[in-house]
Length: 325
Image (tube, rainbow, N blue to C red; front, side, top):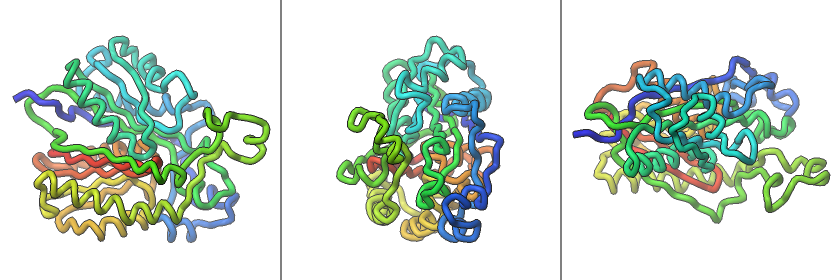
């Protein structure tokens, strides 16, 4: 039976490798401190001429090649990002232009680090109505919004993009279940305070560094230790999936130490937790599709394997997807 399935994946990271010592020096920390706190060893940062849409376009072309389809076959292009090229137009419009995918509707979704899961949900709905193929890209360029002296944030992030192609097929990986959540009462845990309609750009906001990414580290850790484990267990129960059935766990690549704690709480006895943060750090909305693509290209995913994707981040938002490979 024809169904909406994953036809291909792709990813892209910039060439520049940034070491822990390099990023840590302005923040007053070193490689040993960063590794112990985060398990991150290095990250990639974009070149000065690159914007989020450039990274997204590279990942898109990789995914299109993987799927064996052309840009002309795309019905929709959805970019999940919280670091757009500009406040407007949508970054997806640049990607559509770069690909010459003139028949595709192109729009952005901002659910911060959960964005790829939210975008997958939007793509499924779009394809159910219009048919065709959807290109879903998670892409972020956090190096442009980090305060280099803030050790809570500047050591955590890298730049990158990951992409997934959805389309009609009778075989291949499919999304079995998907759920989205937002906990708006925690909206202030992760934010960029200025630059929007609430606090427009002024000399004052620039002087007080209010255009940098900020995070309440302790608050975020408390959040990750409660809703995500509970939501994941409820999700598996509601979908009739036993913890023993999960073979791969691909979470948002927030912090390696935190992910180890989360994985222990979940008690998935036969699952492998996939991590790319050691070399790419936290790439925001890109982290889940980038890690999925890495696992795919490393030939660690096998037909019939159940894969649990788990996104969580600013909003605070959480998205879960169960994929049968």
